Image (cartoon, rainbow, N blue to C red; front, top):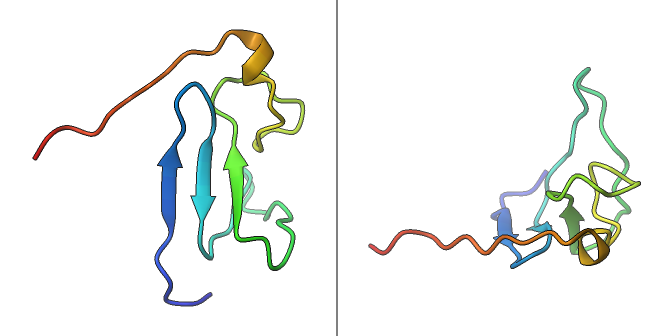
Amino acid sequence: MSDAPVIIRVRDNGPYVVEGPVQVLDAEGKPFPIPAGKPAFALCRCGHSKTKPFCDGSHRTAGFHAAERAPSA
């Protein structure tokens, strides 16, 4: 893995978008495949994706609503 920073963006009413060199591991420590060279991927947070832990866009039809904001400094 490189020293590039990992950035996780919280999308309004949608997934967590992860940018940077990172692995996603299951409960047994096995990695999920992430296509090489892909600059970002999305993690489901609505619970309705058929491709968990990745987002498949199900939040759009599931009525998922969330718009968290970081606290002011």
